[in-house]
Amino acid sequence: MDLVSFKTFIAWRYLRGAQGSENGRGFLRFVSWVAIGGVALGVATLLLAVSVVRGFSQEIETKIVGFGAHVQVESIRHTPLADATSLMNQIREQDAVVSIQPVVTEFVLLRRSSQDIDGVGLWGTDRLPVYLEEHLTSGSANLEQDAAITAPLVIGNSLAENLGLALGDQVTILSTRNLRDTNALLMTRPRFKQFEITGIYETALADFDETYVFTDIDVARQLLDYGPEEVTRFDLMLQDVTTAESIALTLEETLGLGILARSIFEIYRGLFAWVDLQEAIIPLVISVLVLVAAFNVMGALLMIVLEKTREIGILASMGTSRQDIQKLYLHLGFFVGGFGTAIGLVLAWGLGMLQLHYGIVGLPAEAYYMTTAPIAMYISDFVLVAMISLLLCLGASYFPARVASRILPLQVIRFG
Image (cartoon, rainbow, N blue to C red; front, side, top):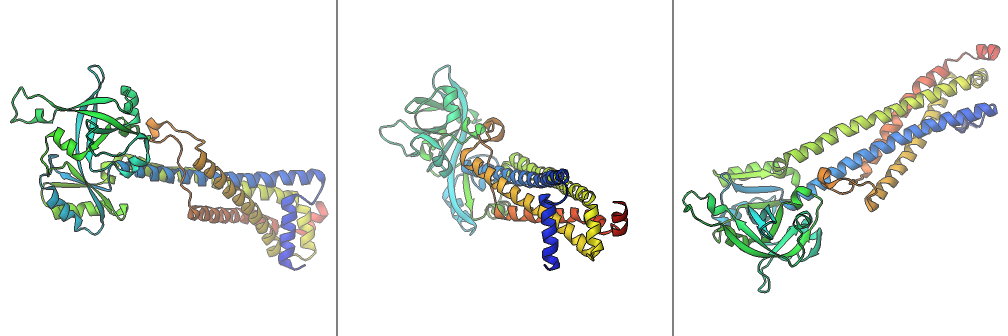
């Protein structure tokens, strides 16, 4: 048996507690499994925390983009953009822009009866955003006006529940936009139009589901007294969302004065700041668990050294060098770290997949904008955490290994 297999063999027997008295073996097994369990718990918790934070970031970005775009272009005075076609042609010159969606939007009053009135954001567009089509719970995503329908309206499930609305119900939308016109007569009446509920969506973004209703862009123009070429803004989708801020700056310079271009990160700065805070703090806090697990490994190996002092002395007296004894305990630390890390990886992956497919952990949508904790697992995260865990466990093994290598065999045999 060569020295490499000899060190591995002894380290493996120590880990299993296969040597020594019955009480000693039971104690060593307990110590070893506590150390392995600590590493596994630290690795699994760290990976799950990172995966949840990544999931939050992706889910919130997906939901927000679903309601808007990577970049929004509008008038700096928040008035209608008059020459929509000319502006669209200028925007299309940007290679990074994948699609342009003209939008007519305004806050209006939605009335079911004289008692049921709520303020909503009317959103006129050529087609319902794809994300909302995917989250349509009932009805149709078609916004084109049909002769059989007064005017189509797609609303959020939260708003429908608040007002007691269902598919096919008739509602009236009133626009007060003309009342804000300083040139208008004092007795000007608000414009209004009848709509029929043709679709209901649910995204778990409570603030959005309670606020925004969607209809055809021409219907919105008519209600809000827009011209045939006027729009409120353009919603742009880019090839890469990370370039949104730079593209927004470029568009402001290109389109000239009076145009405001804002990235999704600027429009929803508060939400993204909250996500960034989670990404910065949670991994840092959870990393403490891995460090604690590493110190747990150190403590476990020190106890094994104390328990196996006589055996170490015998090995040294038989010619085993200090370096080999030190390597023996480094092997033992690697085994503890390796088993703990492997168990932690499997545990994190298993729990993550359960959450991904079954949504075991629920969340209040009002606070977190989703009903279940999201999970986004990446192989790169698992590899990185595994490497860090093994390195920490090896580092924690160094001190006990040094202690074991400095044991004097004659004194141990004489007084042990």
